[in-house]
Length: 374
Ligand code: PLP
Image 1: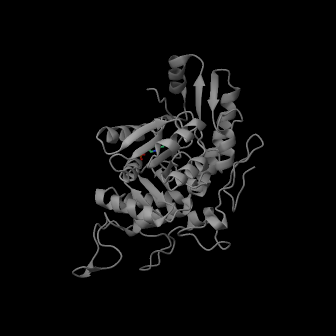
Image 2: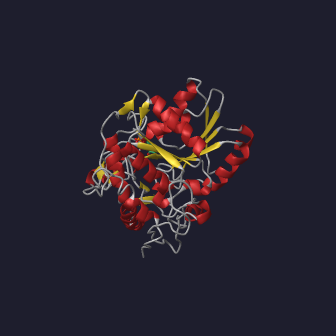
Image 3: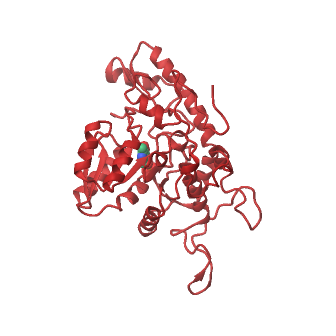
């Protein structure tokens, strides 16, 4: 059964259905409408930016590729002056993503990594960043390299271990970085527990939500301060854009990340913004199909004698199953598994696939397979 309408279309698995992720009225923020009158996220995603063209009344918003905008007289101009600082097409997708995540606003960047690097600019020398040992490899590389240059201190922990919470309280980090589910074992971190701690100790809680997208998880609803995306993945969803976004829960943080995005010159291009906005319109529909397919694949893998172990949060034996059921509104469509027979078996399996492409990335309409150890 697939839920529709005001919920996010999530199939119950093994008798459990992850929590619905429509914001509670009390949690309504930012560009969303008044509590009680708000259309569902599905409707808002489909309609985002419609009617924005006041010039010709185009139904779908036009793309503004211009790098600059006319001044009336020296120093006097309208909403936009220069596309690095602001662009109408990019603003539309930023508003759409902020709305989907329940934030007060967002910046849209040239890649997921530039979104992440905008957030690390919030750290000063001596500040501590806590990040998961198994965070995305590119994030790990950036945090390590910036820490080695003295930009800040970085420490890698296991955020699924309750002892790490107690340790973090004494370490007093400035930024707590979470990524849940993690790659490749899809380990689940309790966002609310870390967000609570962050609030207590004055840290900024950041969640990389790339693996689930706001259809399946909304970290700001659990108390996080910032959400980061590689929009390259599910949000654009067609493997034809490299982009990123940072969504903020409060205007002060938004102003800071927007300042750095402009100062560092890492805002996304209008053309990429146009494609990404188009992608967000079908995010819910794609996610439903992704997940239904993933659940079928999980079931088939579990039945197969060549498979040693399957990792997916929908499985009751998955260590993060309970937390995922609570904090996610969908199980997600990334699956990891182990084969009997080691590397040779993996190579034979990958080479024998017909409908999966061997490539890096995730979240596009095509099915991909990757072997992270190679
Ligand atoms: N975060 C996660 C979880 C990712 O998987 C990736 C890329 O694979 C990134 C961030 C970086 O995004 P991009 O490749 O768009 O720079």
